[in-house]
Length: 404
Image (cartoon, rainbow, N blue to C red; front, side, top):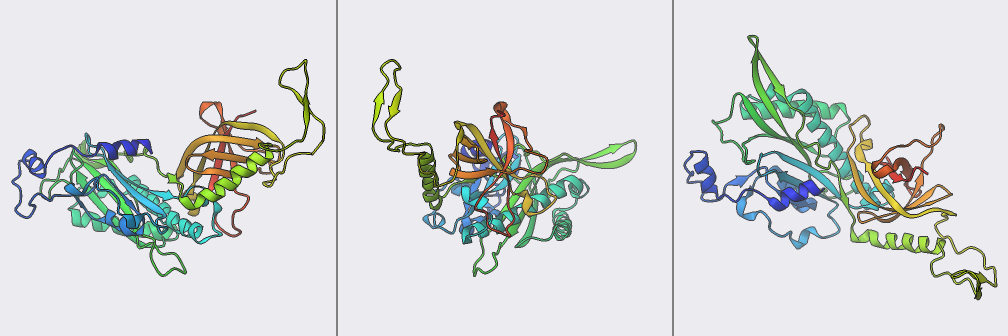
């Protein structure tokens, strides 16, 4: 998430609202009174209390305000990030999860089930946005804004129905931006080239059995659209999404996951013999550092049933793809690096800042062990969680390990 972090830290160019209107050769409308609403805007909206605000603008003076204490409670399972590149105006929106290892549980607890509902809605929003940019934005880009938004919403609704719907209310917004990421005023829109910011939201996401909503999820991307004339015929062209390099998905651990991480860490240490009393021993005088134990107390306890170690604390990474929640969609993957301990049993213990310590199992198929090239000379191998709930939709996960 470093690119988004850089943009959010950089923020927007330090111009007052009056300066912006002056650069546009416009007079400051009396109704503005120094409170121009920015939409899109660099912001992070957390949980059900704040995430619905992604559908509306924000005052310049409120950017960078500290999050209220009401968003730090147990209800917050996700956050919506929106970023605006201050030199080109390109904007993006993403929804990230507040939860690390619990995302892989695929049900079995109320937070895990709620995460599945939120992520299902986010996959649907991302699929809608990508579908509109790839196939419909070019033909609708230069319509009047109300007509354009209505047509986009209709196409998005039809597409959402075709993939099975979403657990919430669909909202679509399309805004023409200038080079500062500010909305182009009505009546001054370009009829030749336009930078459009398309944002698809699923609002009022509801989890079955709960008496409240989980908030709003959003996915947004920018694209250039061109009204071109070639050989006497009028054509409309649209670029691909301009923010493909922004992390499509990311996640952060929450305090409730710390106890499970500590249990896995303790089980790993026990299996590796850390702190295990092997009884009295004697040193071999002719071999420095070698000791012979006088009693055979057997192997150390192995509460996680890891077995014999193959590799210890080697460079690794873990990634999982949430697009499996809706079959047939493009990947939406999160990624974090750390270290792994590999065992003959096929189990791994992975430790990263985003997940803590988690136990995973290598997933084999009938043809053997599938793998793919990973950075730094490693290979991706598919894994699963041994404690995943029966009947839930599992996320597709992989761990990067040494090819040996």
